[in-house]
Amino acid sequence: MWAVDQLDVRPDQRFLEIGCGHGVAVSLVCARRGRVLAIDRSRKMVDAARTRNAAHVEAGRAEFRVAELAAADLGDARFDTVFAIHVPVLLRGDPGRELAVIRAHLAPGGRFVQPFQPLDPAETAATAERLSAGLAAAGFRVTDVRTADLGSGRVGCVAAVVA
Image 1: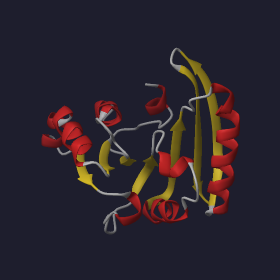
Image 2: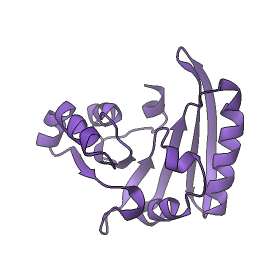
Image 3: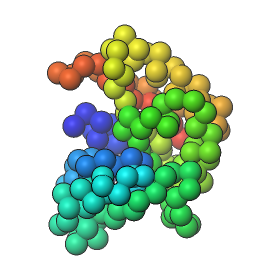
């Protein structure tokens, strides 16, 4: 999966996935020996993701919680990479509260990575620009913007670190 390739997973890195859905990305990160805490606001999605990744949960590589990012109780956890694959709350409006949570839970030198796929492929560059501007306004420094043409359409990814 192109989106997970953008994470540059290394063994034993700690990841926070926002909006895990069915847990496909968790499976791919854990297969590369990463460790993931995945949250989603839908209990149905968390249950499906936990079932899909039962072996990774049993091995201590994956953990799932039902939570909205802005209200998630992450304690003092720090992550090497926080990622959100096409999560609407981060793609529209003012995600200031959510970005503050992300910023607070990145380990020193950690990255926030946001892969996305607009419904209209012509919007890929504009979406990357909008995400980059929003991240800069929230105290991040964009380090990489990538786009690609896949069989499913045009995709993009913005990566940033705390400024």
